[in-house]
Length: 169
Image (cartoon, rainbow, N blue to C red):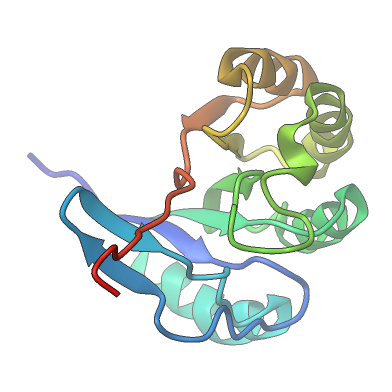
């Protein structure tokens, strides 16, 4: 097969760089692992000046993972990148459980998702993929709202909320 590599999930979350959550970010448990990354990213300007030129040079199919704390912030980021020919799609992170603002709880409202995607759809011809949270009453209802707002696909689902308890301590 002559398939070209896909650079999936180039992280870009907010307009401004973000350090993410402090360590320890990942912990193994007997039942799997827990994570609390906190959306570490380089921010819009560094992504455009450092990462995007290299991705263009490689000629890969690029899907950028992006997000924001509000519909307006998402529109600003997508407006800045939406016409970039090197980007085939945008996975909009509506699902991070590890941030206080703009995380999974905020985006768990179907009407907010639909209105936001309706606002984002005209900003790009690239694929819009809505990344949804599993910690909702009905991920199906959210997926339908995303489709009605103009999403081309959904990622179902992001991180499940979890907790490890050490009864020995």
